[in-house]
Image (cartoon, rainbow, N blue to C red):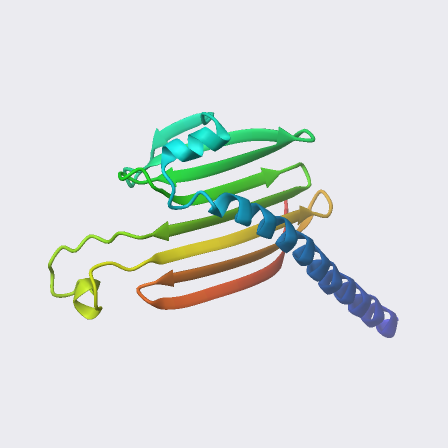
Length: 179
């Protein structure tokens, strides 16, 4: 009996890991296509964005004082939301893509920070670099799949480059809803 349980557990883990890889490959392809499409707007003016995508469904000022333009669509009955952050110089500095169904969801984002404030303090990063400005950027993707009423899996990957330091992480896990 013990050997049967062990064999069942090994088969389940093998199936789970193979499924994670398949989901990751499909998700990466979708996100790469969407990122390529949306990243063409980074660094362009908000007027160019509105010319190509039309007027946003929502626009508001976020906590950083930048304007966020939100475009909402439905494809095959599945809601999709794209957000673009526009700084005070009217340059697009980031996008956010969110798509979800009852059993799956996908969230991808990218941001670039091309301008940095120098407060003149002795600890300012401006004191440690040549030149006055540099580019910091970040991006990531999260994909989730609901397997049953209580069980789900997720994949998450993030990449960051701030202050000339790069780091990334990747996670794959299981969610279990108790209630």
